[in-house]
Length: 259
Image (cartoon, rainbow, N blue to C red; front, side, top):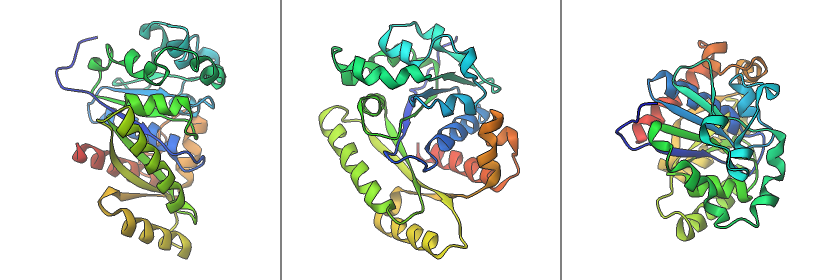
């Protein structure tokens, strides 16, 4: 691989709540950024491995994964997998990752394992996107310590504000103690249904409270977005003209602009 001259940016897509569109956001941001000509690495840090399967990496084809990279010192070349996009590579996850946190507890500098392992390879990429597990455990902490920025997907539901407040508190602690360079790229509202009064009210409240942190793009509820992962395809390849595809295309443009 040929080294890139510009500084790479590492993003964690993070929310301690499940079912908020986190993995969908990671997959589709990664694919659109790669279509823009950027060299992108997608890292699946969730033992459910949905980000891996969502870009076409089948579990039975994975010899070594992010677990082996973090815990077993597998070389980068052996955990890297290609995708349908020339500029997008993946470090996949398997169910082995579910036991990684227990094994990492006794390791030296356990919070910085991922950062240290990415240091020599991030120069090969313009963007690295980490899909975090739906918890604030040691795997998510490693992702945040390794990252320059975070992207926070938030479902337009009743407890949205409460969840964001808790996560922002965690990000502040990480910034103060382990990663002073960590910044919030933005908060993206997901699964939005404009026909629902509650969704409209939540979106209005979140925008009022967090103001410039909120991306202009709102990702709608869209059946095509739900279907795409079962086909192992990002939305741009599954149905590039759908409302979900257009939303993530616009979000990818916004992410680039905020750089």
